[in-house]
Image (cartoon, rainbow, N blue to C red; front, top):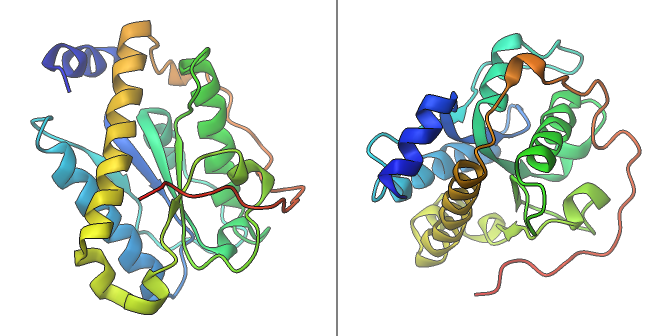
Length: 211
């Protein structure tokens, strides 16, 4: 990433290169995936950014919890969002996942208006059927092999290649936002009150990133 781009982003008020959205469960696989993704993004970004910042909230959240203001602030000041999309991610009991998705979709529409991509990068984990409409319209990363290889998957060449693609998109988003001079303007941003998955429809899947 160009140093001038990073300088502008810092001065504009952006704080995180990426916000990781994930369903908080008593499930070691999903938590391990979220941590592995965070570490990989920071490592890859570290080759071009002096101090890469990735937000991963690990506080316990339960169905019905009120979304904390700190999370709203962190999401708004993030350039991109990586969503760990296990099937439970879309469930109505995990409203905060749908709110994070809806919020970043609105932010991406505003900041990347006119571009062919947006600020959400889905990672599909253990998906047994078609992904929901809000997810299907994005090019997603397929992590289905984690169910077979377990924790070892995160040390494979395939995982590193996938993370390289994710970081390339984050850098592309950063460069575009800086070029268009789109500031976060979090004080004026009205966060959605309805989950992006409130009216769940499941269309056929798109193809994941090609190898």
